[in-house]
Length: 421
Image (cartoon, rainbow, N blue to C red):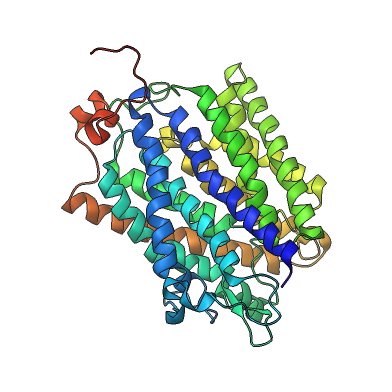
């Protein structure tokens, strides 16, 4: 066992876990002052619920160590409660529990991302029910499609996901998704769109009606996300080596370029470059580089960042044109950014992209993966959300929304400006 790689993986897991509190600040700053507790609690609720479900059975679904299929699961019943991960196989580079911990943080942040689409109007209990069902029926299986591998008899990793190993058998190349462009961002973005449609528009929804109540929170959250994302991307190499270093530098370059791309579009479109735009641009670049960080030259990572920042800055206005209320632009940033990063690899991936004269196979595989995950996640999320809304209710009453979600749902206020006792 390599103690250096073990330490690297455990530190990366801690960095990725920090991303969810970072997301709570990012989302919390974007909502109304009377919704900040509700918004942040959705992220912290995801930490509690998904952390427990991952240990109980999530890992067993996501990493059964057998070839996955599109419509059926393979489940390693021996991994319930992480039971069969307690021993380290001979020849393994690090304890299986270290990898399980790392992947647990991916599951948590993916579920938390979805909550941004339903800010200001969702019941906390209904959100937790949705989160548990969606993680079980969508995230855990989709993680298996993309990331699934287990220890072979010789201690090496044996791949089995149908989007990786399965596609390679058919097309000669598997999907490139280094750290979760499909499994995390397209997956969460599609679910966010579905929930936004189920819950409907906020009271008074329109362009310019709702403004972020605390831009410093947004900047703090973006900074924590960016910091944690180095663990997210570089840690996905599972070893402290040259590929991890490439992923690290690309995780610096792409979001930096995306930040510039976003604020340039803002300046041209609205006359001002905003702090919220800078933070959103950085996150858009982080999303886009996630699947590509281990497979791009740093210069092409900068190009990807500029494209993602500019396109996502325009895409966030689609909700006003198409009439869906994605409160915090999960669709415009995570779904669109995830699609850009995933499809970009079909052209620019080192050795297999069209730019390298490798033919269209990589682009075709990237498109199949992106749109398969998007369709699966959207349909299941819509059905789960619809059933919750029609049974116990998902959306709070309009009058409660106007009064303030924090007091109605949690009995707390984010800011107590005077002692009234």
